[in-house]
Length: 393
Ligand SMILES: Cc1ncc(COP(=O)(O)O)c(C=O)c1O
Image (tube, rainbow, N blue to C red; front, top):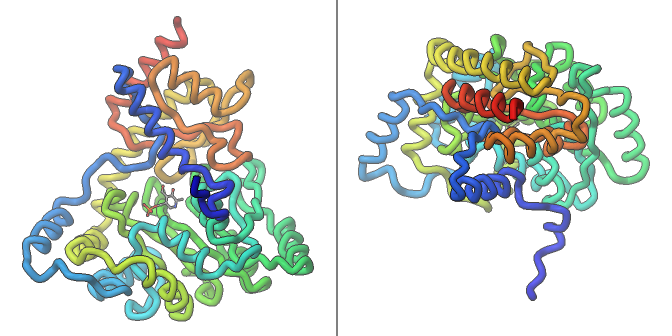
């Protein structure tokens, strides 16, 4: 037997990668599972984006390796997008690094900054990739709990102590992973929270890694942490076209930061891949030109679906806030269930509907479930009917 590397110890296969296999198996048995789990937009990108991809890929000279720093056209489009929507000025030549989806950026940042045993603050509940990327890079996670009582904001007094204790122990905290609008809880940031984050990063000389893929979904005020004065001293922001432009499968994201940070991350990333297909980058640039109409259209669809999700959650006797933003609804399970996994299993095996258990986002999510808005109204109605039937039987 050839043993896997030590760095894989404690790293399981990604939850959805396993779960989708199980759902496939159930479908093969004729179950026709309604999957309300994954946040993969089911609607297509804007037709002008597809057209650009088609036209550019039909040209003979667009098929070679590309610049490691991305096409200047895409970097300029990202800069214009940040200026228009976030009021943040970025230098397209030095402060933007296009990514093959923001998920890879999480790994690149960890590999660039963490030495063996260095600490990174990760949200609980939070996107599971922060945790696995920190571990794969040899770092150690310091979970910080986000509670409903504290509006799912970090408790900075607790974090001050965590950072000081680690400094004294010789295991410095180097990275602080944050994500607002927060996934899975649907919490939007406030200006005050963003100011506190930047101040915290400066006080402790920690890089604040802000992951920002949901700012345009059901959120009237898209915000970037880089908008805070002096943020470039300590902030790296990841952004993505996956959710905002219905391009999850295209794998286009961006990393925005001061030139020094971009150069540091590029030292790692340029050894990992060899750029992105040019027509895809040019089509992504086209997508970034889309205006308010695009977001209005997308959000009208999600708003209507969310009403159905609220109905479904009422049926399950869950409690939830209607003020949530982003692509999901986060809800507390009723008393009487051991945890969200029990609720998820009950509807999966009893009603052929898959709902994500909150516990996969960390222990603080144990008593919650998360429903994705990426399904048609008809699918939600069918899910409601199935669960109603299950309840009656
Ligand atoms: C919080 C968060 N960050 C990052 C990602 C990854 O996005 P991308 O498709 O850009 O890799 C996701 C995807 O679900 C997410 O929920």
